[in-house]
Length: 265
Image (cartoon, rainbow, N blue to C red; front, side, top):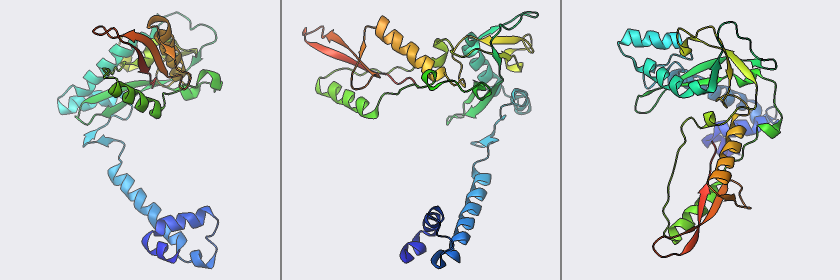
């Protein structure tokens, strides 16, 4: 412990704190000082290197659409506006905007949505509209749990493909959650991201929107239905997120299995 204190003071101090040894003579005079020093250094680093209002030296609008448009105007660009337009074009199918005078159906919970802005490594601006799922009552685990294919299952699938000279294909589904219906009944009030003509209007969510607690499970269930009913795959008993179906090689007539490790997230 004496040698470790010299080479790893912070780790030893954390061990002493976790095991309620800070009042022991061997730790009392230096361990609290080591912990305070560590916290002070980490705090200074976060303030300097982990600023939430900047990324790669580019100012982030921090969830405010108005500020995003102001930054474009100040810099003479339209990067944030294009990112917001692209996001709303893709996510618009998730909402049914009610006309003035229309009433939200009974049983719907009003929540808020906000836009999260980010900068990709190639400096492309990105906007993502997210629902405030924390504003709804906690749903039962039965409608929120979504399984994910095991890492070992993926490795085995790669091994089988290599041994049998099979082709590997990868697909990514854009705005995946929006292909499934929601399990939660929620409504929103449209903000400026919905366009000037829709600001203030009420809308109900008709797709599994990012941010809702049940969206992951809803999308996983919908994906499983499509893979099973439309593509003809069946789940493996060892891992329900690995799907398989019989196939035949056109050239030789040799029979084999096609495997589909599906990761819903």
